[in-house]
Amino acid sequence: MIWKAFGSAFGLTFIAELGDKTQIAILALSARYGWLPVFLGASAAFVVLNALAVTVGAVVARFVPEEVIRYVSAAVFIVFGLLAFKPENEEAEEPDEKEAGARGPFLTSLAVVALMELGDKTQLSLVALTSKYNAPFFIFLGGTLALLATSLIGALLGKWLSRLIPFKYIKWLSGAVFIIFGVLIGLDVL
Image (tube, rainbow, N blue to C red; front, side, top):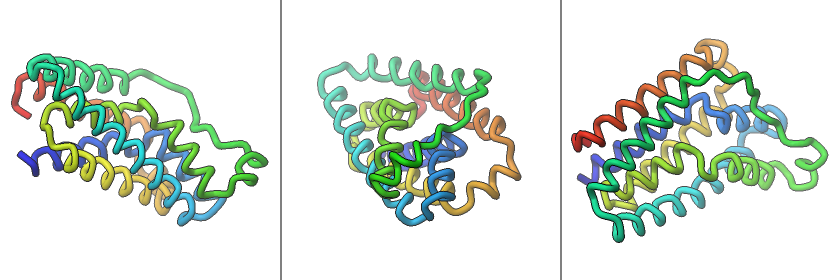
């Protein structure tokens, strides 16, 4: 059960975050400021946000019946999966250079990632997974390691990957995985 919780959190978060707006922002920030301070700032933001997400999930698990959690979790995953297929023409917003220079690359990255990820699909999925598995530490660990891995990919290899795999395919894969997880959670397979 513990490894299933860890694996679900890692796998789902990793796939969902590939090509996400946050990873693109990390790529843009890294191109401007260098990969290390951007990666460290993003990492700090993810640690804080994931700790918050699993704490909320643990509280929900304590007070909400398991069957309700299962159906709500399934619905959340399916909705976010379907939203991944919605066409968008938005580019990742880069922070204002003058504003970023005043805070430095670490704090800029921390602020940008925290604002972009607060209430994002990966944060809500960690809440749902924590509620389902009641293993907050392993959900936190899996989700955080996945976000650190995708941030590192974005910081080091993002430009190269974006030339090989069109963003829409990465987004569609992420949506399909979310829908599959939602159905499996609803059927009580996961």
